[in-house]
Length: 336
Ligand code: NAD
Ligand code: WQD
Image (tube, rainbow, N blue to C red):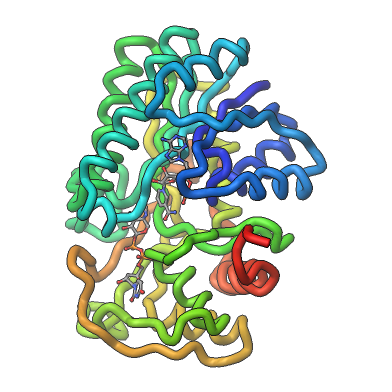
């Protein structure tokens, strides 16, 4: 069964590709390498011992993506990872974010419609909840994104819901919480030039690439005063996509799921756990709060468990030790 993966060379896609190949899906990947390199695809093939088909194409170019659908006749489903994803950058460059994430997705949807592809899995984000009223957050919570990146995700969800109704598509929207960690082979992982997220930053400090972590505020209303998040191991997250494809095979409609663990860790707990994994304390200082941050975000993962039979299994130790293994084995990421 053939699956088209957009953003197929990226961090979460690479791990998902490994899980899908394990289940014998045939993969067609599309990426424009705006935030990735081909080496991740080669490494997925190495881990799985299987080949994938790869197209270098930009979703902003309708003809380029349409050609992929023309060449690949029998696509069963699309998993749509391709997006720009840095919250801070999206505030600086909103038009780039809207153009890439919205126009790019519209081109993809138009091509799907033309070629009669009706099954779809979307990479959404806890960011669509903004600062949620109730913790843990249920899928029924109000949508209240607080930055352009989050708005693009909320808009894409709405466009999908409307298109599914009009064109008879089946859609699974996965709202990821905070993905971290790497494959246990140490061959694939997150490869940011300048990390926007906590764990890759901690990892680069642990490796001596950066001097110290700045903790964004210690006066939050949380047990130790630092921000609490629902971190999920990227391999667990990858497996949710296999479940989503299985759901599309069984049921018709549009389905939305939180993908998290329901368990939160503070910034200080993450730094301490990382120190244990790498064998030395990770230096940090407490700085001011980051604009737009919230005290605590936790998923209610019950709906995914009930309807997808999905439950994250890996804990904090596996998250930090796999991230450290990736960092140690690939001090320059995928660059040789
Ligand atoms: P990533 O940057 O590693 O992967 C995205 C991939 O899409 C990259 O390889 C990039 O080159 C590609 N891409 C971007 N725009 C494209 C375009 N116009 N045409 C073709 N390819 C394009 O990011 P990731 O962390 O793997 O995120 C994957 C998805 O998950 C994104 O949609 C992101 O918004 C979503 N998400 C990520 C997180 C997170 O913290 N990492 C959390 C929630 C949701
Ligand atoms: C985690 C905690 C920070 C960096 C973001 C996006 C969200 C989703 C996941 C894509 C917070 C603190 C961080 C640092 C720190 N991405 N922190 N020092 O903000 O929960 O979520 O990534 O969809 O949309 O908003 O993740 O990793 O940036 O922060 O103290 O150098 O770590 O304040 O409490 P966040 P994060």
